[in-house]
Length: 518
Image 1 (cartoon, rainbow, N blue to C red):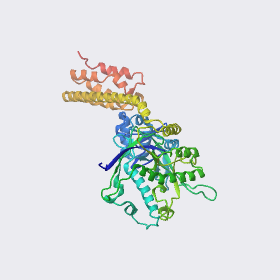
Image 2 (cartoon, rainbow, N blue to C red):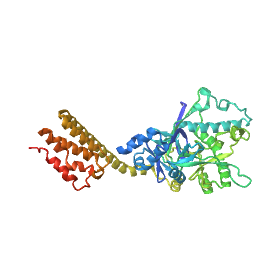
Image 3 (cartoon, helix red, strand yellow):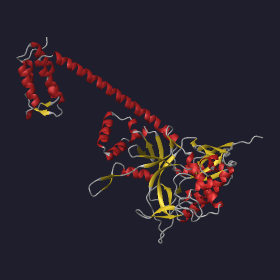
Image 4 (tube, rainbow, N blue to C red):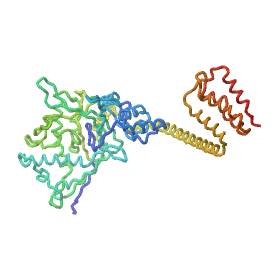
């Protein structure tokens, strides 16, 4: 019987808590708006703005006026919303912060320099052409490698390690000798539109002070994959035989056991501490723990979630750098803080840990217990489904596109009309006599005058018109007819207020002295 050298399995992944895997990109205040706790990410050049708005934005961009650019997009949120290409749910505190701080000065320094509020949001990894979140296979492989190293270290008696000792080389092997060569994991690709949510990423000290107060660090804003999306991702796991070491490939149940042996204790210990400090809901913890009831599932932690789930677990083994102020640090085997997801920046209870997920083998059967748990989480998280948002804004987007196209047509029509007028004017000027050019220049001057004039204050336009009409009495018949057609009482009234009772009468007398067209 021929021995198989590769086994391929389909693996589902269900997020159990918010997951953030960085991609090196941020949502910036100049490419997103927030409306009704939904973030709308847009490309400024793709917005359908009327000409006046486009010109305003271009001028602000040339001035590099960041505050006014932020205010511009907030004021024109309707267009930004309906022409966005990516949506994310937003925690209520993040939405309130944006509303209160966008387009405003955060502080003024002693030298008068204005500091603009930094409202950038770290984006989670996504597929560029689909604008959909995914989980890179490398993220899983790193989490698996940590669990394998921890197990190998325990089996070797958990000796104290040198600071720069290469554990991968020692326990797993490198390059073609690596045992991880036998584990080929593809990316966890989305099986549907993935819902994400922007949370505050809150930093708490693990141990309270003598007064029972938990110290806090800085807070960040991160987009996360929302928990409770049942079997939202799928990946292919290929297990190979390592022909270089002549050893058998890992079995799938062995990998699941390794993951559970490493991550389940971390989950339990961390949650126990969080419950003791009042930061997390005990019922949520119990509901998650009830899912660890099968050999066909594995718990794993992915993305940015703190250091404790990325190190060897034996006491005195890990060496985590703990900052002690500017330029000072110490080494400890455990971190001193925890990162949690919160709705507001000051929240101290009902928080969520980052990064937990459940893996399952695709056996063609539903996991009803997990499915029910996910449905409950979706309701509790108040998530608006991405498909609903797309449908909601499609109609409005079509309306705005139609208005934009109509405005573009009007602009083209006006441009064509101006061109025709310029061409007619140019033709007229080229064929006009010197006296007729005087008339045309006066008419152009009058039409370009923006402020109205009054005859009682000695209107320059009225005086010039009267002088021109008096002079025209000495022109030939054709030129007199021309001036009488171009300079009319109604034309002068369009720019000059006739307050004197005899102004119009005297003007008509001058016009009547000219020869009328036959």
